Amino acid sequence: MSSNRPPATATVRRDNATINVRSGPQRVSAPSNVIATLNAGTSALPILAAQADARGENSNNKVYQWFQVRLPDSRTGWVRDDLVDIVGDLTAFGYGVVPTPTQGFKLTRGQAPLDSDSGGGTLPAPAGEAERVRKAAFNITSTFEGGGENAGYTMYQNHASDAGVVSFGRFQFTLAAGTLARLLERYLESASSETATQLRTTYLARIKSRDATLRTDETLKTLLRAAGAEQPMRDAQNWLATEVYWAEAQKRFAKYGLQTPLAQALIFDMLIHHGQGNLDTRYIKWVLDNRGLPASWQVGQNGVDERTFITWLAERRRSELDRQATKNNAGGLRVRGDFWWGLVERGDWMLQGDDKGVVTPKSGRTVNVRAPL
Image (cartoon, rainbow, N blue to C red; front, side):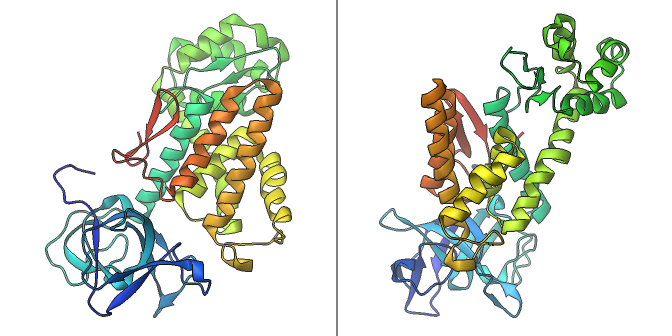
């Protein structure tokens, strides 16, 4: 957020003497759902996240939104938008800058306050938030797969033990799976460099045929790394990751009703790391089966909300990666599992990072998730 803009805060409206603070973005009858009460007029509550009602509760077909706030005792909890006035820079949450205290329910992401004519800044459309989440997810996963936030485009590996034969780029597109061929074809549609010419004339056909002898071809290695420094190759890598992997991840978002940025980024990272089959069977199905949930389960059904399901999923993954790290002496796996578990433990469901909007997937590698490159 811009440093010269007021921070996003909430104040309890005076319509009621007190309001309940919930453990999640929904009202349920379980006693544990209410973690605190706040008196009318309690003010300057920092807003940490915003999310639609997990059960879809609404008024006149307008779904309530919930704000995660930091309480006076430093705990965090959720308050519904009709119970508070909000003000400040809520750009990160899809509301833009709200110049004067306004009841949260009167605001809609992408629209100005209904009772304000002050033009409180340009409000991003929901699509802008979706693009932020996609870019943040890409940059986090690339940090593990290919090097970092705006790096990894030239990463190349051909280890003898690598089933992909040749793996290249920020998401390690492989010869064996055919994704390296798709990447090269996309790159060659717009590239005109000498590197592109050599790849087209000497290697395209062999890559499309998945020629395993290319594992030890040093010229191919040199050419691909050179191409990775070109904008057409960078664009091709992000295009292919969006068309293939992000599209597959989106199918799972829709199937299970997953809406939070953290859930979506985690699913994408797991799909890239484990593959579609393993994601669906060893992780998602395993969680559903072990928690007694049907294969058709969606968020809010069987008394299980999104945060609970993702907590179970992140826990399962952390356990599996820890086991594999011990078995194969691969500490990097443990780091990856711990990173995602840490986000869940901190409750960073909107993927906002620290006070500077940054997360640290692994030592020395940071990603700005609030304003991703």
